[in-house]
Length: 98
Image 1 (tube, rainbow, N blue to C red):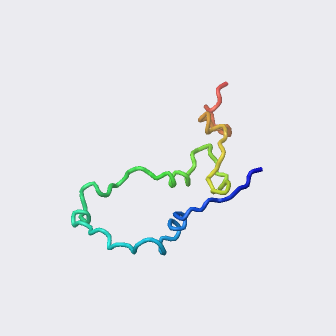
Image 2 (cartoon, helix red, strand yellow; image 1 turned 90 degrees about the horizontal axis):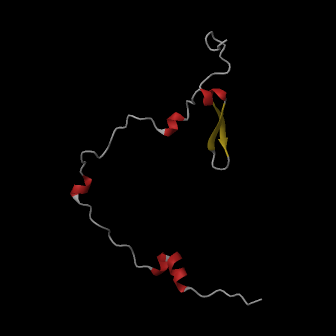
Image 3 (cartoon, rainbow, N blue to C red; image 1 turned 180 degrees about the vertical axis):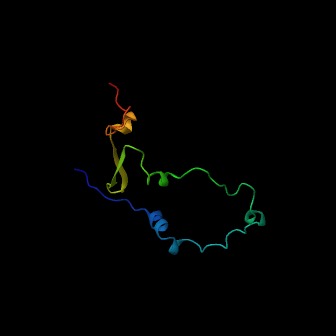
């Protein structure tokens, strides 16, 4: 088996400790007056609903089963009516042909 050794890398220390090795920060740039003015189209009103809002009112046939996994993703199931559009528990006249 070969001998394993780590090479010296002096730039790594400079990268991870800029307070010791880098010059102090400059004053930055001056913000132009044109950048602070509002322009037409800067903000837009949306007539659609956000995705988060849709999740609170599940479609017919969909059932919320809570959050799932480490990332807490929403999860759920569907019954037959979600796939066919027919409610399997609907016993109203005209729902069954005979």
